[in-house]
Amino acid sequence: MTIDGMDGERDREWRAALGAWRPPHKAGDWASPAMWRLLQLAVDEPVLRALFPWTSMNELHVSTTGDFRDYRSESFPAISASASGFVVMAHPWGLEHVVLETSDPVAALACMVRLMEDRLPAP
Image (cartoon, rainbow, N blue to C red; front, side):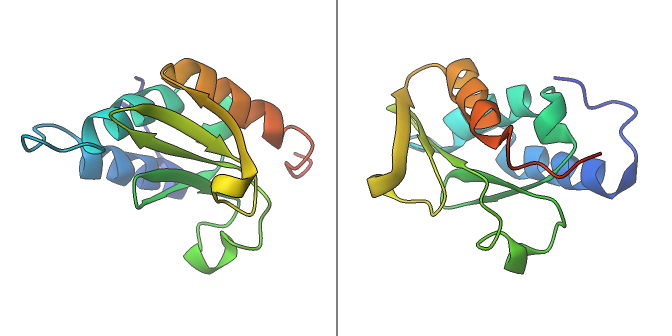
C-alpha cells in the first residue's frame, strides 16, 4: 500500500476511503476486513488510483469526477467485499451482472481493471 506523499483531490479521497475501513474492526464484522484488504491493494493499482474511489454497502466503486451523482451513469464495474470473498459486478451493478466471484482480492481487482480498459477516457 503506497499512501505516503499522496497529493490532490483523488488522493485525498483514497486516503479517506482507507481511513473509513481501517482496523480495528468490530468482532463479527463480515465486510470491513475484506474491504480493508481490497482498498490496500486498489490504492496501488494505477488505473484505479487515477480515479475517485467511493465505497458504500461493502462495495468499491470508482468515478472520473468524484461526484457521487455520476457513479450510476458511468459504466465502471464495482467490487463487493465480504468475509466469503469478492464479487466483481459489471455496470449496472447487481447479482444479475456478476462477472467473477473469488476469494482473491488481487484477482478481483485485475478483473475490474480489465473490464474498465475500454471505458476509460483518453489521457
